[in-house]
Structure formats: structure tokens, C-alpha cells
Image (cartoon, rainbow, N blue to C red):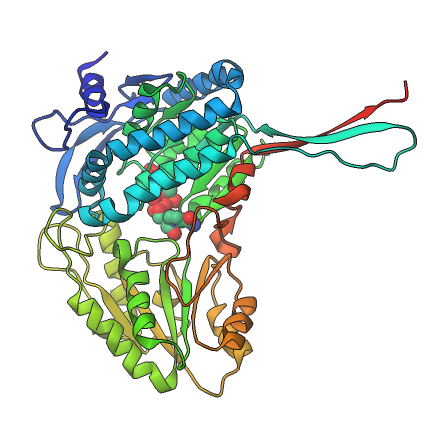
Length: 506
Ligand code: NAP
Ligand code: MG
């Protein structure tokens, strides 16, 4: 084992205290066939977004590395993994959840350092969420069934359907919630009986590799879980085009999602695409306004706006618009923004300098097009990739800040008139190529359900900003992609349905 591999091996042990940028030499190996190995691809620099400083370099996965990972996953699929009963698979996934929970503090610290997320929010939300996702999916391993079917063919028949694992699943995830996203892909894929090759985003590879290593330590057979951090254009491309990988589950941008649809066309791979969003928040005058204001602010500033389902377009009824917009702007100004490990911080930096500059570019374009800044409006004067929580008024549908996904802490606001009916309001809310989430605030049950049925989005929440449960199917339509994660549908996405007809006459 190379020295780099040894250092992360120690890092992944349940008892070690590993911290990036501390005395430990920085290293991110790949996990292939149960072994930590150094990548043979391009060198990749990893930063601490809270300071902007480099944490270190690692070598990403090359196409050859991805090939070895896919081969290992293929062997495990036909070998030890196929021989395990569903109950044993369930137990292993549950055990992984327990191991993650035991090591929660270490995972939280690593993720915070690598992404800039406030550590307290990691502890309170993302770690428990990742654990919960694994536990929930563990239960599905023993509950995936086909069914018998009655047929009307002449003679006597025994006919039934079977759910089979689709094979080696290629999992490609972005940088906004690296650990939660890894759990959300691994849990259902493993429950369904697939083996996996997971490619984390190149800039946030650490917790995924560590989770994979932890899985190997607690007893997952070698090759069932392979982790290949590296460049999308190299490792991601190699995975998406690999002949041993019949299924790609992708979370990321619409641009790359479309690219994957093209690159997988010839092989007819099965694709799940969880893409971007520009989700509307509609607040009616009769809503519980204090709750709505608080929730609207949380929805866009949580994780510095780097959330696919963020409520990023606000539509508020004219009679309460001033109060609501002022309330959200006030919260934006009060929000404690700072480094991941600073006390009391509620919003961290953006994940990278590239992402910060992208967000700032949108804000500038909005201002140039006539938007008015009522909170934030620029970068924070400090090292690291900070953008102030921003609220823009006087925005119109043609502006890029309104039409495009910013993936940053920027809320655009528009006002609708009391005379507009639900169809008019829905037309405004649906005026987007995306269709991921929609948020409705009203005490009027007729407006709530009436607008909900008119919204063209995959997920709708009424009088809440949360409501995202692992048992509720999640996924978008239009430019937000297709396929569902979570729930039974999320596990079935990793299966093939086969039907068997047995003639009993002869
Ligand atoms: P991205 O550029 O599309 O990257 C996502 C992943 O795809 C990364 O691992 C990336 O690798 C990889 N990739 C890039 N090019 C590839 C290629 N040619 N072939 C295969 N893989 C490739 O997205 P991002 O900028 O990291 O993430 C932000 C986006 O994700 C936003 O649009 C957001 O809305 C979306 N998102 C959606 C959901 C959802 O559930 N709907 C959840 C979270 C985020 P690199 O690291 O090298 O780029
Ligand atoms: Mg990218």
C-alpha cells in the first residue's frame, strides 16, 4: 500500500481523528476492489472554501482506473454480492448507517472543511440525514418483490414478475451535498442488489471515499462499492460510457445531464437525471406571513443557495409584498455568515472560487438589467468564497437572474396582483424550463390545492420549506430531469422488471 493509501486508510478507521490540513499528509485515494489506491489521472487541487487556501492535491481517477473499478464491481455482482440474501444486504446497509453515526463528528468535520458548510448544520442536519437515508433503504432490500399475474391465454399458466438488480450502477454526484448525495445513491442501489462505482465531484471527494472505506471495513465484500473521484470529463465520461455499466444515476447540472443522454444513447443505458431547478415560492396575502418569510429565507440561503430545490423565485401578493420582501431582506442582513468552524454561523461560503464568480456574475447582470438590491448584492470582504445573502426586486422574467439557475444565495422577487386568478399565478410560476420544486403559502385550502395541481414541478410543498422525506419520491420534470429518488420508486430505479410465463399444460 502506498503512503498516500495508508494515510487515508488510517483516516477511515473508526477510531482515528483525521483532519484535513492537519499534521496528516493530505491524500485522497480511490477505492477499487476494496483497496485504497492512488489514482493515475490528472492532479486535482482541493480547497478550503472558508479560507480559499489549498488543502492539498490528489490524483484523480483515469479511464483505466474507472475500468478497473467497473470490472471489480462486475465480479462482485456475479460473486459474493449475488450470494448474499436480501436480509444480509439489509443488515450490511444498516450497519453502515450505524458506523456512519458512530463516526458522525469526523465525517461532519471533513465535509465542513471541504465544502465550507457550517459544522453545526452538518451535525444537526446532513449527518443525521445521510444516516437516515441508509437506514430507510436498508429496509427495502427485503421488500422488493414481483407479483403473480392473471393472464387470459388459453390453457393453464403460472405467470409472474421478478425484480432483478440492474447490474453495476454508475453513480455520479455533485459537490453541494457530497455525503448525503453519496448515501442517497448508495443506499437504494445496494438495497436493489446492484454493485456500484461512485464518482464524487472532483472538488469534494473526501467523505465519499471515506464512506466507501468504512463500508469495506464493516464487511461489504470487496468490489461491491468502488469510489473513483476525478474529473467529470475523464472519470465521469469513462463511467458513463463503460460497457459493463448498464445504469447511470446522475445528479448535477442540466448541461451535463443532456450530455449524458447523448453519450449513453448508443448503448441504451438506463439513465436517472436529477438536474437543476429554479423553484417558485408563492406567498398569498392570507398566509401565516411570519412563517412564510422565515421559510422563504431559509429556502434560498440554506447551504448558501447551493440546493437544487432552493426556492429561488418569489411571487408575493401585492397587498403584503412590501412586508414580505422587507422581512426576507432583514433576515438576509441578520444572517450570520462565516467560516465553517466559526461559532454561530448559519451560512458558509460557496464551494469554490468558480461558483462564487458565477454567482457574482449573475448578480451583476441582474443589476445591469435593472434589478434593485435590497439585501447583499456582492462578495464579502474577507478571504474565502463568500457571497452576501442577496435579495433582488424589480426583476422581470427575461432577466438571466430570473430565467437561469444561479445555485447561490440570490432570491429574485416578483409581485402578483390580487386580481390574478390561480391560472395567472401558475403561468408565472411555471414560466421556467425547470420543474423541480414549488412552494405555496396560504391558509385557503382551495388556493393551496388549486395552485398545487397547476404547478408543473415534481415536488410541491404547502406551508413548509421542508417536507422532504426519504419515503417521498423526489425528482423533477422538464430541464430538471427525470427519474425519482427516495421511496420505493428510488430503489426500483435500480432494478429491471422481468416477466415469466410458465405453461402448465404439457
Ligand atoms: P455538474 O458540473 O453537472 O457535475 C455533476 C457531476 O457530474 C460531477 O461529479 C461532475 O464532475 C460530473 N461530470 C461533469 N462532466 C461530466 C461528463 N462529461 N460525464 C460524466 N460526468 C460528468 O454539476 P455541479 O456544477 O457539480 O453541481 C451543481 C448542479 O447540480 C446544479 O445545476 C444543481 O441544480 C444540480 N443538482 C441537482 C440536484 C437534484 O437532485 N435535482 C441535487 C443537487 C444538485 P466534476 O466534478 O469534474 O465537475
Ligand atoms: Mg462541474
